Image (cartoon, rainbow, N blue to C red; front, side, top):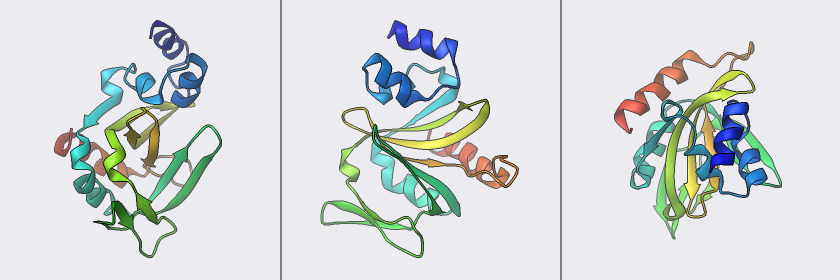
Length: 161
């Protein structure tokens, strides 16, 4: 992990997944090497309660980042419910589907620079240490974080952290 720490020191706003791929470690292993002030752990057992909170944020940026695609979708997170082994999310939003919530092994609130700008997200990780998906605080037309969502994000650090 010394190499990961060196890379983070050299480029503190670098892409976590890119560092993980280059070093050959899981994404979560890299995230856990960032400074403590940049990440707050949430127990994965709080998945549903956290999702319910996030569903009140309005339109967010939902990202699925794999080696093959970075899929970005903007919309409100629908309220979900468990059924047939999945956490099912459907509603009046482009974001919908079925999440294997039992595969979630770690959740982090991540507050760090990304390409020189503050970025705030909630990241969900599977047992392999790879991101299942991420929920980001949105930006306005001038690329500033939406203040109301930043306030809600900060509140999660207290209520879930």
